[in-house]
Image (tube, rainbow, N blue to C red; front, side, top):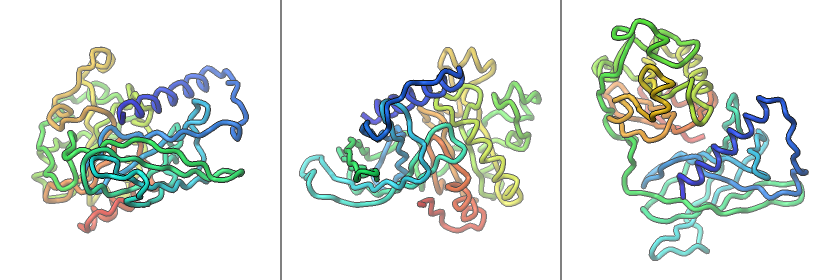
Length: 300
């Protein structure tokens, strides 16, 4: 269900972008007349604290309203659960600045694996609208989790491939992101941020905006935090993309989607992880904490 929700959300997003890119006005019914459907834009949820990114579809079109704050109520519906008794409540705030589609992010703690439901309440002029979506929570994530030791892979750097256009699909690469491997960063005794992204072939259309955010943060924190970009596909990127052939680092980190961003402390321990789109407003406080050697609290 999680992957299906993600696929629906991304498909709708891409359709919206294609229409906008072609300059063809779409016939969209009056927004107030259509129900709003929330979708979870994450491929995996686990026991413990989770970042819950939501998109909103109205008539199949993604919404991008920065004034919305969503109330999120969680119910455990697995064995012994009761879908009438809320387990926790939280809020999802707007995190779509600079992204091609609206994103609303909440943080929530799941105390057990199994089936959950999230009831999303969306404010409307004619009264709040609520909708439930299914969440599947696992004992263990595929991707490295907060508290795990980062995986010291030997990703390609400018020392291996001096031509940056063969090292990254970013049309405007910052050379500083390609100076060290993750293994070297772990030996440096300095916190680091690593982004697994493909700006030129991103299926979610958020890799390039993510890199823009990270470049801005590097200009502020680059003296205290190392920044690394790992391209998802090996060169030639287009051919690898068509063949779904990923770089070894993606496989070693067991990443099945893109983009992913990880914050790692000076001891090599993952302090925060972000799947999908990120914004300056969400990431800056966390990187400031990372730079100071403080525990990272990514919650808005």
